[in-house]
Image (cartoon, rainbow, N blue to C red):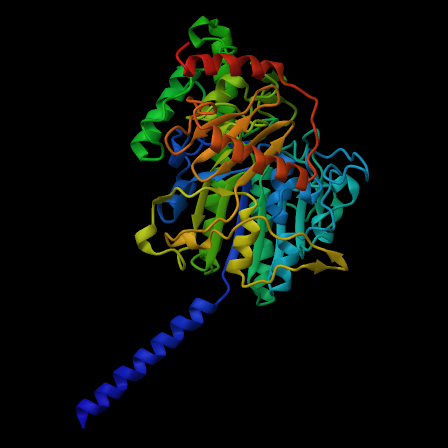
Length: 542
């Protein structure tokens, strides 16, 4: 009799546990999508950097790191693709914010109404939707977070500032402009911290409404004009007098040690337009050291804000049930060329203007070549970190996920996580089908089953990746073909050795190019293209 009672008790406990697990499995997780701005592939500690980023490193250590995550090579197009799950041309932002008119639907400079945003989709699935940070997808044309599905928002139209007294500082709270010294804002705010502060406030509102939340946290860091508190800049000043060649080599060696990159992928030669560090005067070295110190401080503060966010989630008891996706909008930024910019009485303060410059951008994009704007790996590769304590098995913690992923996949992933329905029509408009693929299977080490290649076009720079093959060309180049599993640093062009593969990829690209409405782009970047020839000659042994 006692044995029967024990058996029934154990059975009841087992059934109760199974039911609880089933309910838990069906529970919709909270989701936070974090987008950095101009952060290079090698700018985080867990991707090879010397800059201390302990909070992002911890998310990677207890989650999954993507080694092949791609963006669109530029700010506005990446944001459009992230928000809509279709290519930026299809969303109306094939380039930047200029409106070319109704005859050029891919270049209207604003999100169109044949696409839906992650907020519109997740809101229909019962989520409380919020956004903080840099918008840059059509504010000047009347497209705000508040009229594209976000319940709450604190946004900057296009970034370009860190402090309230910055030259371009302008904020909109739930669609209404507010003074930079409003009593609704923290005193003496720094934008990187402000976005997190308001993100947590909006999360509290979601809790009050007893809804899961979806937060899009779009940082303007580390985009120019680089600005950070002096006490943070001082931590790094003097540490970069070693120069950009040595820094790049050190990052590359750390990436190999981490297991992030294959040691058979050789570093491309340094852009010959960049001056050798040893050729610089002491004054020039000091100036460039300070520029990189400011950049490092901006990234250090970005990481600190991630730590504040995680601490806030843990304090509210929701961290374990929250999926965090962290990526960047393009590769490291070499604008406006070799010297960058270093202007103002006190570079790094609110009224100064500092651009990283091409030498340090080489290190930011390690081990790849090219930068923001360009479709070689340095321009389109991003760190990609996924954290979800309740959903990622402990056996996956700290692992690398090497399947290719792209910014268009975020919408499909959120639809999957939130058990949402992606619409075929919305507000009376026909909606384009999703282009991306859910990354959720990769959380547990499963194939994501991508059905289509990944495509790029920006300013005439173009590429297609299909499995291990990548076809790529800058505007002034002929196509090149690379096996990016064996040669991701793009040193060995197989265009002439694989004519059948080349032919198939060119045909696929041309079909896509026409389908999304891309158009010929006239602008060239002479300072970069001289490097292209030198790089390929070096890579081929000439």
